[in-house]
Image 1 (cartoon, rainbow, N blue to C red):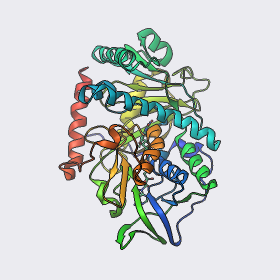
Image 2: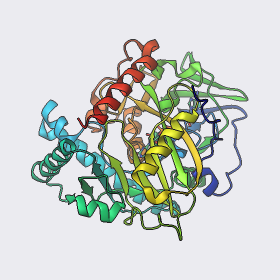
Image 3: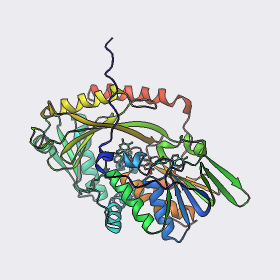
Image 4: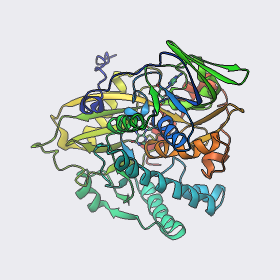
Length: 433
Ligand SMILES: Cc1cc2nc3c(=O)[nH]c(=O)nc-3n(C[C@H](O)[C@H](O)[C@H](O)COP(=O)(O)OP(=O)(O)OC[C@H]3O[C@@H](n4cnc5c(N)ncnc54)[C@H](O)[C@@H]3O)c2cc1C
């Protein structure tokens, strides 16, 4: 058996291009807040922003540096879609539900632009839309049906179809039989965005502490006590915004078993200026394949970024990165001889019903999580709904706010389950189903 190549050192393009990290601001000593938020990604920060706007005294506690979780590692694809399609929502519930979820997606995209402009954040935002790329006749048919349904049933005229020639002209790859273009959404630098949001909130006086893992949440006579290594917070309520990283400490045990962490990996090439790859992905959108084991790609700083499933288990593996690189080079032969300079990964939180959730665990604790790999826009927008829930005001977050997020059955066997499902999906992809 051939030995695997040595594990390439994990190195994120975003970290290399975001500029110097702001100094850490760990919590030191004892303090109080109306509401304490556990997790300083887009969900925690957007919730802090919305609570502060309601006049609530709020504090954010992040275990690592800001942007350490998925919010600083993701692909930066800003989209209003959910893993569960809108037509499927209409079939399972009703057209009104699908319409509300579609509106939420569009509100979430608009919210990104509003946040960038409000805080003056420079995060390489391009409102360039997205293209779903059909790899088989069956998926091309289903994209056509989806496009017609979105236009006819939801009046969404931002979507249209491209034929195979159009796909080749735009992507530079001959692999695709057609594609579904959505002019809504775009691409962003995720780490610049989460750091910019943090800086803006801090300027407005919101307390955000990083390097402050909440190690325990204790009940007190009149609320909660959140313990961190160097301090503690007495709070009336807590919001758990820990998503795919809900197993860092036992403090978030109540939500840990409600999501299945799934490793998503990315690679980035050297800058393509002056190489045969320079003209690839000419419109600068985000591109996703229709395969179940989806791969996706985009440009940033004239590099090509390519993402897909990462290693199973807790750490990166050389073979997962090698598989991505192989797929990228097959899809884009123009990259022959081009170096891959960055490889990194992170955890997305999958849910059993493929939808994000927010809800109340008890009288003191609220959660929001489970974006199923599409949380850049949504998690940055969810805060207004989470804040309303925490403060007892009515809010309409569609299915996100109404469906229960139950513990995953057979949770200890989740890794085996993820492997089995992934293997089956790969088989179906390979035979073009
Ligand atoms: C590789 C990758 C690519 C992705 N690509 C895309 C994409 O292109 N488009 C898209 O829409 N979505 C994408 N996603 C998903 C998206 O990044 C997430 O949905 C989103 O960032 C979720 O934000 P969050 O704030 O809920 O979670 P996170 O950003 O993961 O934040 C959770 C935070 O909680 C902290 N935490 C955990 N436990 C504790 C504790 N006890 N005390 C204090 N803090 C704690 C963690 O340190 C972490 O920083 C991707 C995800 C990954 C991993």
